[in-house]
Length: 86
Image (cartoon, rainbow, N blue to C red; front, side):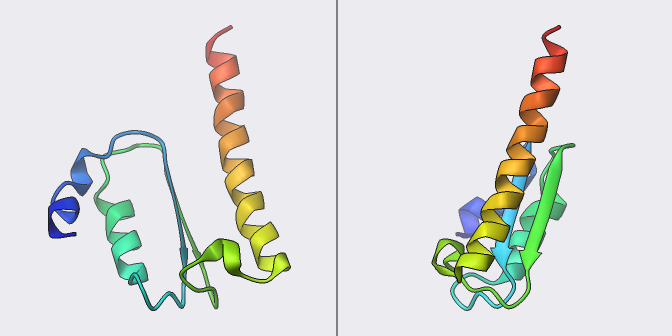
């Protein structure tokens, strides 16, 4: 993990970081550090309060929220790509 953390500045692609605010496996502070240190100019951090490590294992309502945010983020970048190709 230390090797990975030492390379956060090398991340220079569009980046969506999603993390459960109550995750006890991976500290949400690490997700915040990745977000802050990444070189990407297109980056988004979503911390979901009250959610745990496995976001896909949350309640149906929470899963829909997380995956809805992910799809929205991806679709917005896909639309930007379509516009750039015109």
